[in-house]
Length: 292
Image (tube, rainbow, N blue to C red; front, side):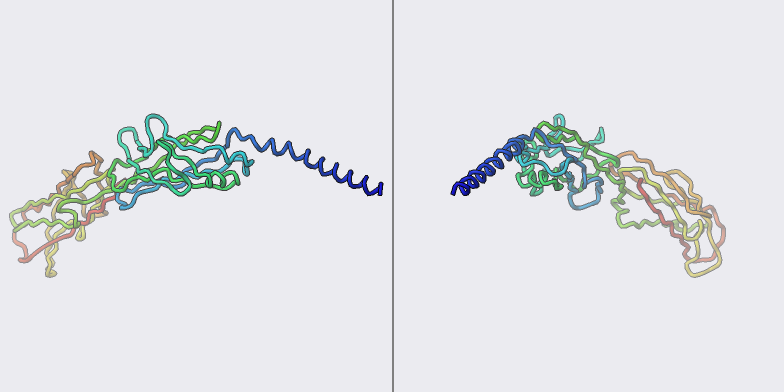
C-alpha cells in the first residue's frame, strides 16, 4: 500500500509540473502591439471612360510574417485616406480628378471616414491568409484627360503604419459626335469641268492626342461609277494639312486641345478638267483614328 501511495503522489506532481510549464506560453500570447502587413493594389489599375460599369479599386492585405498569435485578433486594422481626403476619395493627376463611390466588400465596414476590417477578416490575417478589401469604385462615364491618376491611403494595424499609393491609368479614347456619329460624311463637287471645291467637317471628342491615317480607295482619283476609263485627279486636305493620297496612307497628328467638342474640315479640290466622259465619279476616303 505504501508503494501505491507514493506512485499517486508522483503522478500528481507530474501533472502540476506540466501546468506550470504551460503558463509562460499563455502569458506571451496576450501581447500583439502591431501587425506587419504586406499591402498591394490588385484591381482598378486601368480606367476606360467608355465603360458603362464602375471600376472597383481593391487592396490585398496579408501578414508579412505568416501566422500570428491569437492576441492579434484584437488589433484593429484601419484604412484611411491621407491628408484632407476621406472616403469616398478622389484620384488626381494634379489638374483633374476622378471621383469614386464608397463601396465595401464583406471583409470591411465603414467607421466614420475610415474603412475597418471585420473580425472575420482579421481572423484570416492572423491565420496567415490574404484578405481583399474594396476601398472604392471609380464612377463610370467620367470623360477626363488620359494618363495616370493617384491617391494616398494609410493602413494602420496597431502600432504599424504604412502608406500606399492607389493609382489608375485613364485610357485614351476618341468619340465621333454630332453628324459624324454614324461614321459617314459626303462631299458633292457638282460639275467638275471648270474646277470645283467641296468640304465637310467631322466632329469628335478626345481626351488625348490622335494619330489619324487617311486612305484613298482610288489613290487620289475620282473614278467613273460605270467603269469608263476616264479618271479625275483631286487634292485633299484636313484642317489645312495637305494629304498625299497617291501612295501609302497619309498620316496626320491631331493634337489634344480640350475635352470639349472638336472639329476638323476635310476639303477636296478638283482642278479644271475640260471635257470628260459623262456620268458620276467618286472616291472613298477612309479615316482611321487612334488616340494615344
